[in-house]
Amino acid sequence: MSAKGNIAASLLLFVLFVAYGLGAMTIPMFPGQELEPFKPRTMPVLLALTGVALCIIRIVQLLRAPQAEWQPGVDGFRWRQAGLLCVAMLTYGFAINPLGFVLATIFFLAAGFFVLGERRVPMLLGLSTAFSLIFYLLMTRALGLYLAPGPWWGA
Image (cartoon, rainbow, N blue to C red; front, side, top):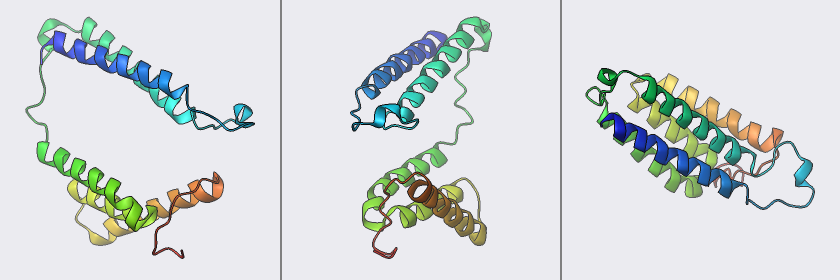
């Protein structure tokens, strides 16, 4: 992609992040949530602000870089790994309802680690289980959010 294409793509992402942020500001809240430090629109707004900031940084980098430095840089890209991770994400999205958050997250993380090169089964299952259980307990116990544990988890 040429320099103009990179700048156009960054500007398009900038516009999308601004639109996402404006849409996030319309997320309804229950009465009394206005004064809470963490509300339903907190993370979407932070995500939008982060995206806008990164787009601005990238546009400035592209404008300040010498012309010879603008190369596509996709020669060494690992398309197979990226495709397998996308398949794993799609499978995770479909598996989260029937399996529940904990099991689906364990399988997703194990598949992701495997695609990225980890081959030790105890490491795959240990890390995946530990991360998903810690995240589940943090979300449900510490923050009081409901995550469906699935039919296998004491339903």
